[in-house]
Length: 434
Image (spheres, helix red, strand yellow):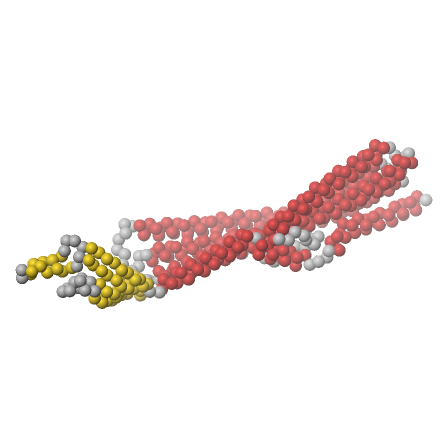
């Protein structure tokens, strides 16, 4: 008789374990969609929805217009000018007893003036390079914003997965407590259980319901946050399926968007040095004008057509050392950018190593969590069956359920921590999962 009782207990244990596992993963099996495709779709939706990216696009447009503006410096400049001047006293001299006027009192001048730079020793070219550097920085800034948004979206997405799984665990616990309540209510009616035992189970059910309510509220908040960032509020994902780390992890930070942007700033600083150095170079240009004016002897009041053409040559000789000091300042700024890159690389490498350490620790603990869950499930089943046969108490069931709940949540937390560590590693190293 004892043998058959043990055999039946083992059989029931197997069935219950299967039911528990099925309950925990049923929602994820039912929604077995391609989560990566869904996450990518949400991320790409955020790129068109999030206002910050519109600012980045406008910055790129501005940088493109600056390049065009600098290139236009290669073109000649033509201006139309007109002037009037009243001059007193008259400019006149006595000649042969008469007064001869050399300049009119009312002076009129109108014409077109043009200048064109023949040789500037690389000034315009250097300015164009700097404008292109600004464009590159604007483009990388947009990529950095996309990178940060993508990983924020992924973080919210997988936190939603975590909350869904946590709610599923609460459903398992509540289902077990509901069975215990039914057993205790039956025993109470038969006089084999006390009312305090029934009230205690009802209290435990209320406590677990409150936990589920809190988790549901957190889930709703995350969905609101997801909708704010991407315009999408509901997801089908139920698994931590992110896999962006290869077998050979690396601490290389060259692809980190933050490092790339600092390198862009370094290039801009170096180009500023080049532009400052070119201010010591001479300039050679053409100038021409034509128009009409008065003041020509002997008929100084008549308006006459005139024109001129010539060459301008300008070379800096002395400016009090201001240019030399400006070059020194620009060189120091470039050195500062180099130091900023080294500092950022060091910080990111430190963060990567810490993230990989967290990942390794979580993976090791996850492997040990399976046996803990198996034992907790067996203990919960035995406590439930003892209560059913009148040889156990609700306190044993409560304790066993609490242990099972902790084991399941611990496993879930390890899974979530592994996913979060992978996300952080990808963010730090510049990996694009979308």
